[in-house]
Amino acid sequence: MKLEDNGIPTGLPRSVGLIAGMRKVATVVAALWLLNFGAYVTIAILIGGDAINGHAESGRYYLAMHGHLTQVSRSVFEYSRWHTYLLWLHTAIVVVMGIWNRFRSNRGSVAPNRP
Image (cartoon, rainbow, N blue to C red; front, top):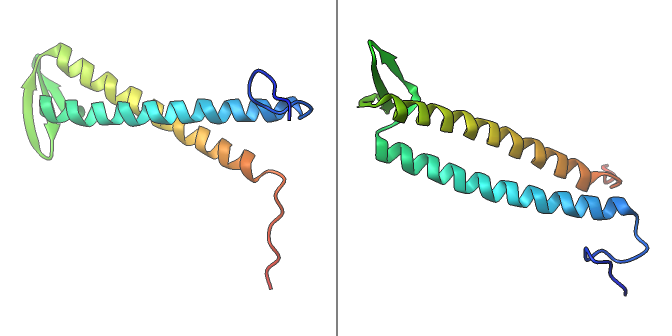
């Protein structure tokens, strides 16, 4: 069997290669999400919480974790807030890519007959 440069057998529709490529991209994005999530949890533990659950008042910034507040600088507070937002965005991207992959893998399959 002869293969193209991308590892797809010759003669198959180009969409097969695109789907295989998207699966690779989805795998990389999911792996990066896992690293991002691990970093988020580790950093939140080390700095005393996250800004989303914390608050700012009178020029003081507090992170919160399980009801405990930790006062931090504005830059740490902003970092925590943006890391949380980016993690949410990354999570949404992973979910959409997972749904897309599931849809693509089920496309063309026939549902089993049920009595």
